[in-house]
Image (cartoon, rainbow, N blue to C red):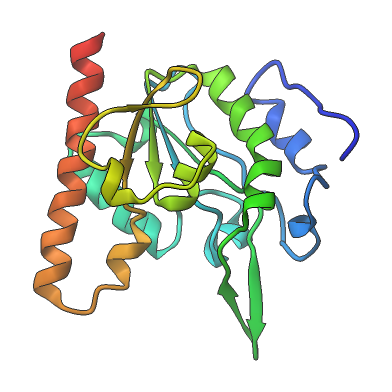
Length: 205
């Protein structure tokens, strides 16, 4: 599918097209593609990095440990998960084997750019009022350039096509914080970011 670009007319059609994708090599070692999920009229679209091990096996985004952290933060921010669209910048799980374990590897610029085609289709079909980049890979995909989270976090941005964009951490970052006080503080900041998105979208409608 490298030479042609299939275009879906509905979100329902998109997963079967994504499942055929060979635009980058990641499909070869993944169990399956992991499409975005959520209502077609979602006002907020969250974009993560890529599926993890649990997501690769389940075929659904944000269902592993980071997904549980994400769900908790959404609830505390007053956002119902079934009202938002959740997806990833890259749709296949990039990993390396260590014994029997599959360890996450960050997608590179080529893989992010090749998968941008699918993210653009999701965004065009959903037409969200705001996009939320969860982590640096999502920022790279949505802004078409590398940028640090700290430089963009805390204030509204715009994608190159003019869509409202917010930038925050990926929830997996919280899982890597060992100190409980630090984790609590960073989780609260994450919730504040999500609440800001909710309020700003409501204010603009």
